[in-house]
Image (cartoon, rainbow, N blue to C red; front, side, top):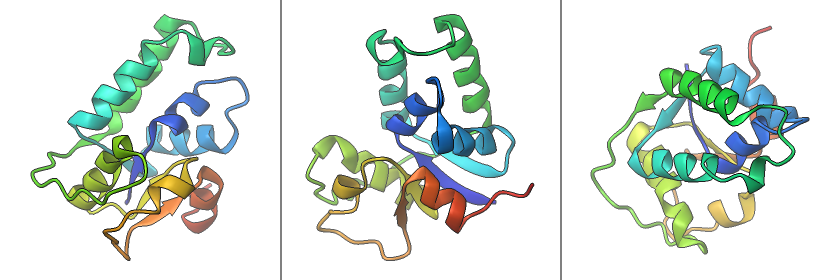
Length: 144
């Protein structure tokens, strides 16, 4: 099964009205078509963003429903401990943990809307792809 790191912006987009391809990737994770991975830093970031009201002003889901969907997602995630800080030196220091988690999990890709920053690190991992949700669905199509 394909192992992915989902950036927080994908989680937020999946829970908003319309959701589009971010929701399709998120659903594929819920259906065990992709294996999402999670570590301490990403979990803390997810919980922080889900605790805010502003990003979800346009959501059709109530806070309780979002929490239930998130719990279902967590149930599908594989927990990965990151023992070594690679520090790929991304333009946004707060994104370094995504690369570190992907390397520790031996993930095939990071799915994000922030391609520009996440793929610009000084330390390169040639086998790790950084993809938008649309690219993810194209490169790694889900079974029907």
